Structures are given as structure tokens and as C-alpha cells.
Length: 135
Image 1 (cartoon, rainbow, N blue to C red):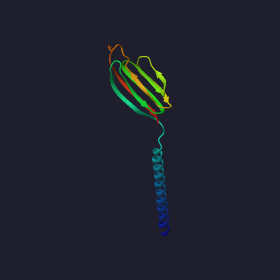
Image 2: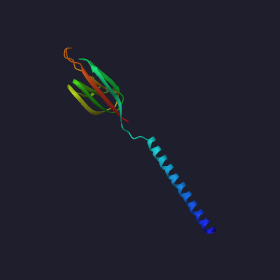
Image 3: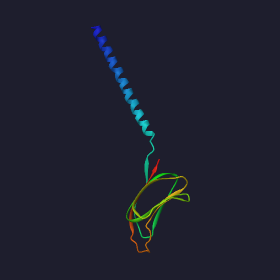
Image 4: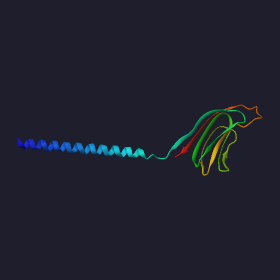
């Protein structure tokens, strides 16, 4: 009888030790996963997401600090899109209804969306501008 109780006690002790080890591994995995989320990998963050009406001959600008950007502009009328870095134009498009580009600004700069004037008789443009920054 004593041998049976000793075997049961040893088995019970083994189950307890195995349970503690399993719980320890689960806690360790949880800590690893939570520490993973403290460090986020760089990705694109939305900086501008605006829908506006742009009358004939008007423009809107956004100033941008140094960084890497993506721009997407969609319009129902012909517009021009440009970006500058310091005093240098990175791009300035002909009239278009949609535009997408990735670019870098090294000093200070910005972007412009312009509805070119047609002697003040042109149509207004409904535009949707999205700008992302890489961080």
C-alpha cells in the first residue's frame, strides 16, 4: 500500500512540475509577444486625407518636413500637382485627373494642388488628396 501511495505521490508531483513548466512557458511567450509590439516596424502613415472643392484658378498647399512621402490625387476636372524641396521642384505635372507618386524631401518643402485658371471661366474641381509619410 505504501508503494502505491509513493507512486501516486511521485506522479502527482510530476504533474505539478509539468504544469508549472507549461505555465512558465506560456508566460514567457506572452512576454515575448508583448515586447514585440513595443517595437513597431516602419510603415506608411496617412498624413493628409482631404476632399475639397477647388474653384477655377485656386490652389492649396501643404508644408512638409524632411522625409519620404507618397501622394495620390484624384479629381473630376484637370488639375496640376507639384512638390518642391527647398527651392527645387521635384515634379510639377501637366493637367491630369489622377496622380500618384513617391518622393523624398531632404530639406523643407511641400506640395501643391492647383486648378489652373481658364480666364476665370473654368470649372471648379472636386479633389481628393492623400499623402502618406514613411515612419
